[in-house]
Structure formats: structure tokens, C-alpha cells
Image (cartoon, rainbow, N blue to C red):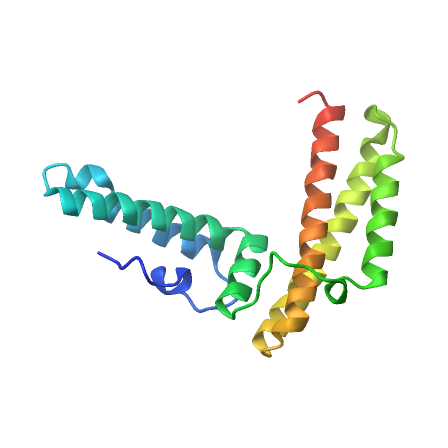
Length: 177
């Protein structure tokens, strides 16, 4: 059985990189879950049962983290000793704050009925494009060992990710999901 002290990339035998093969990750996850599922240890001693439960939980946490680009970015930064929870003014430039305000205003100004759907779709595509560009920038900074710059981009990714979720919630609300 794997060890609980491996970093998540090591656990899945993946390179420590922002970009990864999510299908490969998912396949390894399924294989590992099959291997350590607590039901397989029902007749085992208590210590082995407990280890299987702990390992299953650890594998779930690792998979959830690596599967999500935003969680994966935060995890990569944490492996480099960067605190992604603390944000100071140096992490957020005036251009980012202005962009945030403009995008939020454009979202807030939309009608609350289905007539807003085309504009929400356009806004969603725009935010997805920005996310993709920022993810590429983040990956480049990480590869170059520029963790302070990567942390700044991470905060931009957080904002764009949150905005995308708000856009999708707005679509669902207007479609009565």
C-alpha cells in the first residue's frame, strides 16, 4: 500500500507539473481506489482496516486536488512553501482590481431573465479564454521557478474561476435549473 506522506504527484506517479493528463490521473485513481478500498480489508486486523480508510481518504483528497486546475495550482505553490491564503497588495495590481470591477459590473448589469443568456454566454467564453491564458502563464512561471510571479497569477486565476462560477450560476438561475 502507498504511504500517506507522499506528495499528491508522487502518490499518482505523475510529474510535478501544472499540466497533467487528467484521463491518466483518473485511471490511476480508479486503480488505487480498487486496491485500497476498505471493503477489501473487512477481515483484516484493525490496524490494516484503519490504514485502508486513511489511505482511501488521502487518495480522494489527492485526486480532488490534482483534478481541479485551481486546487492544483494552489497545491503546487504550497509545495514550494508559498502561502496562497494570504494576499497582500503586491499580489493584486491595480489593473487586476480594475478588471475585476469591470467584469463584475457587466455581470451585475445584465437583465435577470432569459434575455441575458446570449451576453452571459459571451462573457463566459471571454472568462474561459482569460482563464486559459492565465493558466498558461502560471505554468510557465512554475516551470521557470518564478514562484512569486506564479502566486500573483494564481490570485488572478482565483478571481476568474469565481467569476466563471457566478456566470454559470446566473445561467442556471435564468434557465430555472
